[in-house]
Length: 501
Image 1: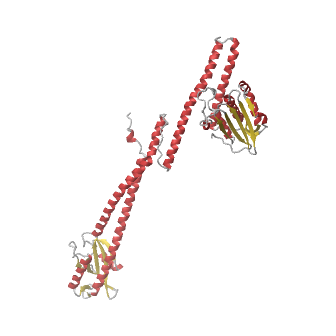
Image 2: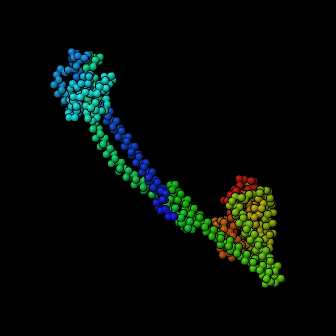
Image 3: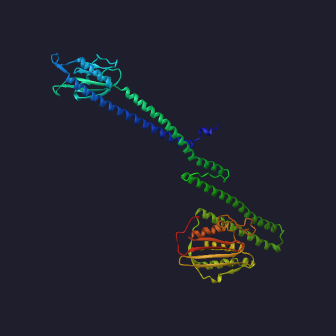
């Protein structure tokens, strides 16, 4: 099966869609505007033409009434109109026609032409005017329309008609028709439309150019983002989007760059995590396998088996702590970690944990300070999780305290919270690394020369647990002198955080 051409079958880009929609909107806007303009001009011109023709028809009807009479001797019951001075009237009407550019036709009430004054060669002067036009004129006392007057003309004209009265307004002796060519209106409308179309083409061209530039600048960051995401898919997180505006697209580009930085950091953390976990798992498992094989094959004598089994036990505990930290991290990420609140004494928890590290403290000859000054302090929280927090802080303090150094504890309280701090002498933490110590998988000692048993999860879990209780933790250090961690816990239950900070 042949693959379809990607470019041919690809969906339209946002740029093309925006361009098409914008151009169509501008085009139809001009089309509607042109239609309205044409109708407005046509209606205005027609109204003006009607006003002129109606006024001319009234004037001619008045003039004919004053210079004509009715011959009642004609058989048939209706008198035939005749002019007193027909030649003079005709000559005067010719001047009138030439002046205003209209045709004048005078008929009797039977629609028979009596006088036709016109410069139009195509007029049929001997034909009868349509009877319905005469009848309507007499009935309505006026008439205005566009037509040929019953084939009097070969092309449509504007027609205005008025009855010619005698004996006051009681009798009609004839009809006056004043007509005008409509081609001048069409010519004027065509001229206006040509000017409008040329202007519209120029405006449309400028609009298309402006919309094109605007659309290109609008979609350029989106194209860069699409290109960057493809690079992300290949594992390259170094690509960034150029931020050139302060609008919503600019904000999106900034957010995208922040996301890219976060992804880059996460990728670095992931790689570091894989390397750390691989190392942390490989080392104890290699030790355990080696010592057990040595015991099984007799390489290790019976007298030393207990010694090496104790090492195996320590390595298994190390693996257990690693698994527990990973499980705690998973529970925090999924929001499954729940707090079992109770009142308990924080001092009692501290003393119990110090006793656990008694051997390591004695081995490094570490001085414990401030313990005798602390009185029992009741806190409200999850006893097991707070125990884990204090354990991790003391474990770090013992691990990084120098030989013959000290670890100082302090627990204070006020009406709202209980404050706990642990301070140890030693190398400390560089100021540039202090903001990072609570990040997951972050280890200040990259060489593992001192921190050989850590994954960089302890302080991250500590901060997460403290914040779940509604408190917070901070770190201070003077490089080469000391390091101090301090946290506080509210005395009363508050709206504790249930998710990661």
